[in-house]
Length: 132
Image (tube, rainbow, N blue to C red; front, side, top):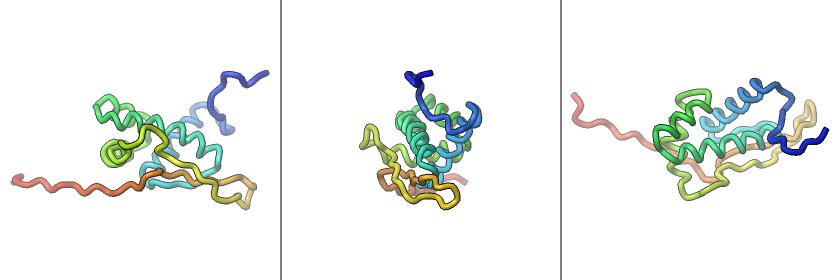
């Protein structure tokens, strides 16, 4: 059987497990801004998170809801839409990089670090004045 027309890696998992894995990796990347995982998982997470960043950069309600549905926590979705996406408006693509790091001792798997290309600065919240 040929592999023509099949997109994505199976990562040795069933469909629902694979979706949960990517959702978890993307959520961790948004919260921690840099994670280390195996190279194939990092490459798949790159494809997944790039699409989410594009939706988050729209800034409208539909984009926000799409991001919320694709990430595990509301906190991560809000951080992506409100903090990270506005800082990445200068780019049209290539928001995330995958860098090979080491070979894992236990099984010899190639590890990789996935992180945002631009430095993400924390945004300070404005205090509400006049509320009594």
